[in-house]
Length: 438
Image (tube, rainbow, N blue to C red):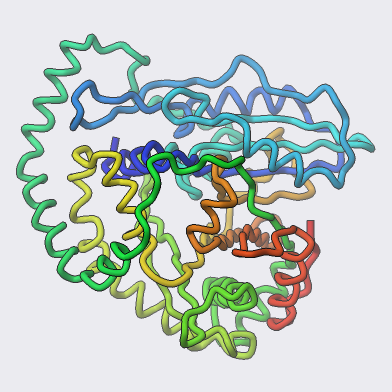
């Protein structure tokens, strides 16, 4: 496994939460179940077709092993009303998904009244990031399969695994030494954030004791031509319009600092052809004044360009210590969460851009509606409040629509999809963006 993937897995085990990615398709007509069965079989021969196998060494590198998927698709035996799709999608997010013990992903079908059907595909974020997830879906629809060369689970005898992983660790000593130096530089350059993080209460050994919740979700569909027209009219691009919308939603939800600024955390894909990393990405953090983004995107666009231009230096600083990942004990990983969060109320953003049209055809035909989101399947309201709430905005374009998904939790509430929809609609109105809501 790449260090970043092992780090993702370490965070999952340390914090007790399971970051999940989910795509949901709504068909206004019956789906082709045989087409979905082909789709599911093909998913097992791509980036989703794998599990984490731990090294027998406490400080060893973990490995990927094969997982081809279940024998058949899951089809609910009951019929539900069309307006329960969001509730059903939440239920799918709560179902067990685990990148080590399996299943690492789950495909399910829900018949709806009037001959409609909903399809959900959810996976662990350790297994893949958002763009890899979309690529795995389109590959499976198109019948593209790959032999990634992974062994079967448990195929290495313990003695052989110990010898191989010890040798791998010895060979990595120069890389580990460089990572130690990079970690020291990172600590010096971020002493202020480290001090602020250290001042926060220590996280509990067991992170979530209360019942889990799924943050309210809102999905908005915007005509792609209108989106492009408004981006150009406001002096921006599609990316800066997305950032502006996320910033405005954040302002409405009160996720601003003392100066009224918002902090957007945007992943930047580093995925290349044939890349098998689960999480092939770095990221930038934008600090934006959301006051006038609805009338001009020029400042947002300039901030985005500035941060992307500096990404190579930022990436070197942040990712330099990654080779230390196998040596991080779980208690330290729990404390590092406070460092990763930094200060303020960051807004998570993920713009997947224009997707392959096949992404909207899991059974081989176009779904009338599609949305995607990221969330935690095992997190309590208490923990969300301790973290200062959350706001995560996802966007992509497919089949002439811009799809924007907003998941949010506001400390002290209200926390309902209806209220969140009003806030999102208010934000879109400031940009002159008419939207249809799921």
